[in-house]
Amino acid sequence: MTLTEADLPRVRGKLSFGAPLAPYTWFRVGGPADALFLPTDEDDLASFLSQLDLSIPVTVLGIGSNVIVRDGGIEGVVIRLAGRGFGAVEVKGTQIMAGAAVPDAMVARKAAEAGIVGLEFFSGVPGAIGGALRMNAGCYGAETKDVVTEIRAVTRVGERVTLTNAQMGYSYRHSEAPTDMIFTSAVFEGEAGDPDEISAAIEALQARRGDTQPIREKTGGSTFANPDPPGTPDQRSSWKLIDAADCRGLRVGGAQVSELHCNFLINTGEATASDLEALGELVRARVRETSDVDLRWEIRRIGRIRA
Image 1 (cartoon, helix red, strand yellow):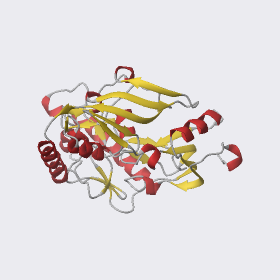
Image 2: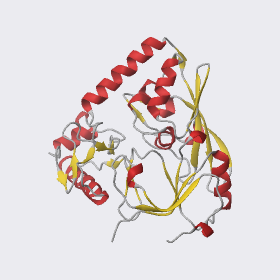
Image 3: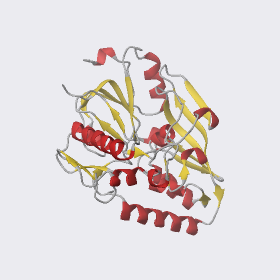
Image 4: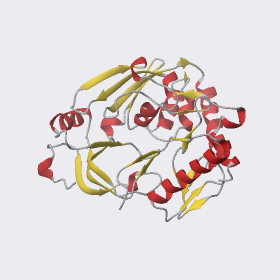
């Protein structure tokens, strides 16, 4: 699809064409967007969507921590929420309101400063609030659904909506919210606690993550969700299944299964999106053969496969 400025509504934010997307992803791979839109705020986003031709596909890209953009790029308009309009954090009592572009770890830190218990797990979740809302992100026994009370979003036609926790239809690493709905902010609820104790808990989680995950590599979040419902004790963690299938350190082109944590894929420097996706599918095939478990991708794979 070839898009020009004449095909799209006027905006206050930034609009570019043929924009490279690799710099916006943690894996640093992927082709360009036909058009990339960085809205200034929710008003700008809603106005754009209300006037955008419904035949033009729309894809939302957060801070790129949990996504593989395929080498052929993305058709239509890619919307990336960034900047002040989606980066606000406000504290009120034991509640925190955070924009969709706020990094999860920042929400954890703000909660600690305000003496709010229950959001510490966000310090171990790579990405931003928008993605956490979409996939019910979590770690170390806690999930987004445990703390979110209200979600603001804009629909594909520019309508603003407010959703409750129950309306999101949350389950393990999944929500039932329409895929074309763009989350703009959310309210989280914790409990009153001691700021020093909360900060210490976050530091412990961060240290654990640094010791067990390849956070200094070109990587993303966990590649595959843990089996749900879980199987036998040996089948309850994806990394254990991957390790049992002898995939630790496995490579395809410039992509490698992490030696440190084998549920993470790494771009060793020259990987393409197709290398990463092929490696993931090879891992799935080996696990299926050795454990008869069909691993489900947790990393989103979006865009066109290059011919």
